[in-house]
Length: 255
Image: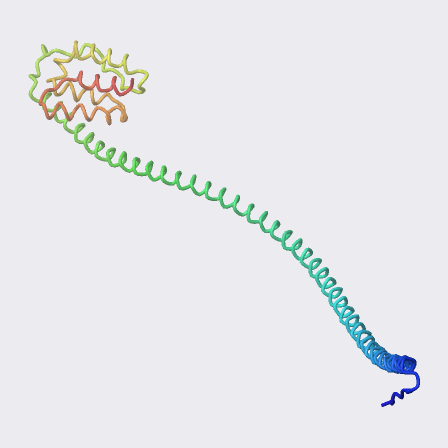
């Protein structure tokens, strides 16, 4: 440490000189400290600047990596989006095509179902018609058997009537010719008039009311006989033989 000397001859000047020396020494010491501190600061700033530069470089590297990653992600996204759009377009086209095909198939199925329904209804109608035809056939068989029985009964009744009738020259004879058989429903009213006239004049010669009923029945065509069977049945059940019952039934049926 620097010693400070003083002069005994001039105390004020000595003190002032001493203070000057001390100030100079302090200033020099402060400058030295400041210079050293400045050097340290410069070194620290240099070190910090170096680290800052290194950090900046690393940050830039990271930024570049991030940018590259971002660019790669964008590229992948763009490619993926393009692929997805292309795939969606393909799938949409395929689905539209399949939808059109499904629509056509659905239309064909609906048409086929309608055709099937029509055929089923036709089959049902045919089944009903077949059943009705079977019933008619069955009735016809029954009526034919009844007709054969009735014809045979009528023949027997006529034979019996001829047998029991007295064979005399004075026996009444038929004055009107037998009417023609009923051929068509259109001829029904004329035929009824002819048959009534015949029975009114020759009914007694033909025979009893029962024989007259069978006489009328014998001059009907097969179709009309099928209808008249019901009237014969009623006459037989009621034991009341009236050929007008056959006329009424035929007129009602052929209205």
